[in-house]
Image 1 (cartoon, rainbow, N blue to C red):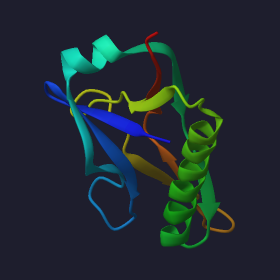
Image 2 (cartoon, rainbow, N blue to C red):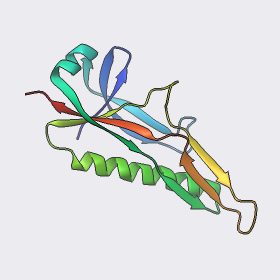
Image 3 (tube, one colour):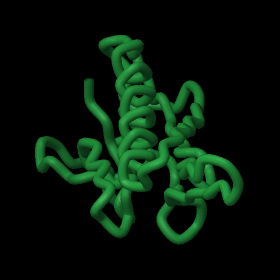
Image 4 (tube, rainbow, N blue to C red):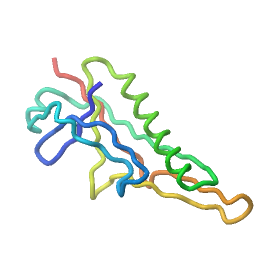
Length: 132
């Protein structure tokens, strides 16, 4: 299924790029597969609903906790993509500098010291349907 993201006045096909080593762990990479002017995209597709996803993972090893959370987020994203119909496109609606999610962790200080990774805000997605 196709996933897109807006870049200024353009909409481009992207793919998830979730990496624990990256500064922005929840990232998307342009594929170069297709590009629309924003007006052209909105003429061709209309948003039918929005979805927010979040994930959480706990482990005694910090890196394992972060990677587990990113995998859980990717699994949720894949589940949404798999449920799309052939005339639907998934769009990343979270905006950099406004409401873009970043990973955060809490660490317990008593008992087994565990790291719990979550996002500071959910990843916002839109489901767009091709206009008739």
